[in-house]
Image (tube, rainbow, N blue to C red; front, side, top):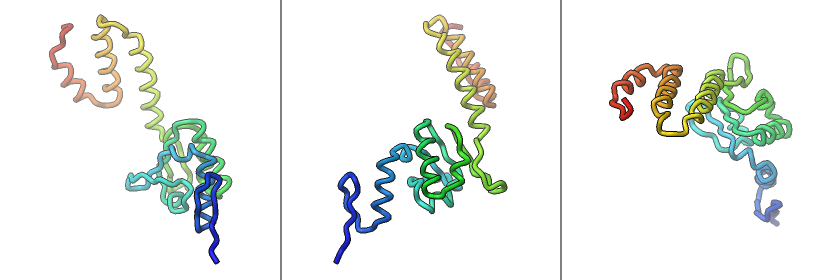
Length: 160
């Protein structure tokens, strides 16, 4: 005798766990777009897998939907470390504390990005080219790329 498990989408499985796992992914599709990486920087593809849970060191959430699906999965599967993740962004696992914490550097870079995007939105004609260049150079400088800024300043410009 053989038992076949049929998921809600009609896909057949010989293993009950695999079938339930597949159905969970169908009901919470935003889990598939969450980025997760191990200590070697290798992407991990299945957040519902125990091996991923035990070895995941960085998680990147892009939307509130991903956050909601991740928190639900954490509660259902007992992956309680995922409950440390409370907002969109990049989260790093800290082995000393045993918790995920938001990557402050990533947050800083995003805030800088948002600031300069707003400034650049004002540059809507060719006459603002020099202002746009200077704005981007300021961003690069703020990020610590003084060598790039110096090299770019030496490049001849049409507006000079």
